[in-house]
Image (cartoon, rainbow, N blue to C red; front, top):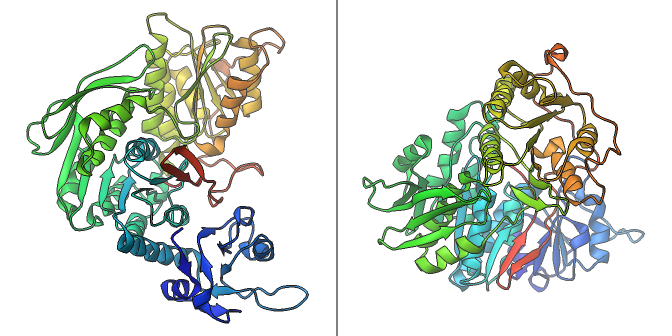
Length: 538
């Protein structure tokens, strides 16, 4: 974090000093909501959460060297009864946002930092990882790890940047109208990209129209002198051009001469590994061959989005293409492929799921099965959460799609995913082609009994369904699969059709599930790229 005095923190947050003799002499160079991350010079943010209260850990933070705490109520040391040095605010989360805005303003006064904002119903994290690779080769870059993208995660990402940071990549998620506007006001992005508008979390938003309205808030939040990138292949995103306050560069598949500034993917195809290959054409007429390491043709728009932002930021075309060609999956459980020594391949895409991304993953699986050496395909599918009243309909569509794509084996996991199995049967999947199980452990038993060399298995669900952990178990377990060590599974048949009565689309979290407010963990992707955090909003 850029060095801030307690006096500056009081000024930025509008808080009141507690236990501070001279706020001008107390300094912070790091900020966190996790007392386990505290080092000397830390601002510890005592944020109340759903399962715990950060105020309980103020003492531990100061024992580890914290300089100051941001609190909603006074905390005293025991047994002395003295106040810990703190800034008291009414709402710690809102105060984090105000402090992040102040930190960015100060960084801009000290150096040429450029802020990039990314939003969309799908593809944000992959695009963020690609931009981190591109910009990381150009200068010191800070980006969030995973999906740390909400009202807590964005400020914490900002706090990882300092006066040496050249590029700050911000992922912006939302679950209500106004969320993106709030985040954009904090970071004031120089460049922005809106990827797509889908049905993900339509239940929370109150419909797709509200999702469009919310994602489009980024178009109105770019700083003067900046630029916006829009997906020309998404009609709802295209409409956001009318809301843009800066020049727009479009991106899409195929030639679109109607756009003056357009980044194109020409001659798009996928190789036997399922990775997209195309000719990247930039607005200046330059063309570069791209052979991505990302699995799935649907990633082409993420690749184009990253290329468009980088082009707008002045990065040379050959350097953009090099980064796109050398960047694979970085964040956890996003089309991550593992090839086992016994010939079984695992694709773990179970960090998040919505109807669009699940359909894309199934199409990729089907394509991999039809490669130069045909393979038996398995789709292990769990719940897509927060779909509201459309939950059963959307899961039903996925089951029918799996049959139409000729997926060899389908396992639906959990009550919310049962319409996938029911629809597969109605579409014509009988006998031992499809089954439904209640838990991931039951799915594991099926896989242990049935997998054989050459099979390729997709795990896809929302994070709460726990299929990411199941995918890792299958990918990295030393157990032999298909060895007969497990009893043969009982495959459901047409007579086992059960009408689903739970239409909420919810999966209860377990004690081991990471909370969305968990604190960031800094890692390094390259010599000049710093990633932070692990959060998830839309």
